[in-house]
Length: 47
Image (cartoon, rainbow, N blue to C red; front, side, top):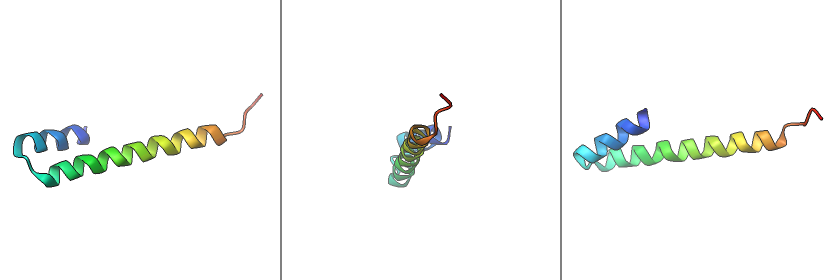
């Protein structure tokens, strides 16, 4: 949702700050997903 807002703000204004904010959100999301995947791989199996 915030990602979409940042992108729309960039589209409408051409503001580099809006674009940089959008990219920051993308990087945070990517890092969070990588962390989640690593935690799932490291989780002990119940088998």
